[in-house]
Amino acid sequence: MSSQPFHAASGPILLNAEITGPLGSVVVKLALDTGATTTLINRETLLSLGFDPDQSPRQISMTTGSSIETVPIVVLTRLSSLGQHRFGHSVICHALPPSSGLDGLLGLDFLRGRTLTIDFASGQIILD
Image 1 (tube, rainbow, N blue to C red):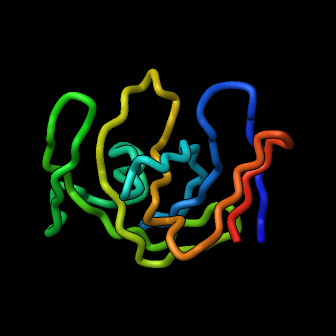
Image 2 (cartoon, rainbow, N blue to C red):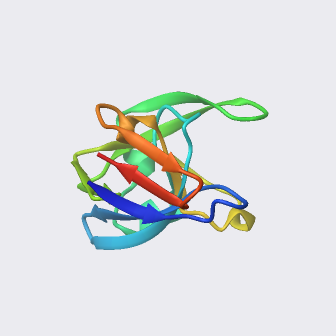
């Protein structure tokens, strides 16, 4: 079990995560998104880790707030957050607006099979 603090009074729940690719690892800031079925990582972040999303053999249709887009799926070497590690984890590659200040969204695919506790009173998120 691992917990991470978050700002319970305002804004989205932001989490640190580490992603690993062919060129190394980087710590990123992800928003917890229980409305996202699949984790999404910003295209620029994936490119910096040595992934080439344009060469991905897998694509998926993704519904955004304004359209349906076809986006590549990239298989990470490792994704770690909240004390959990996923090896060979597939993520959506998509550009996020720079104004978001985020590197991606942590979706339900990372949480499935675990117990997620969001304690707004103490400002802690726990994933067992």
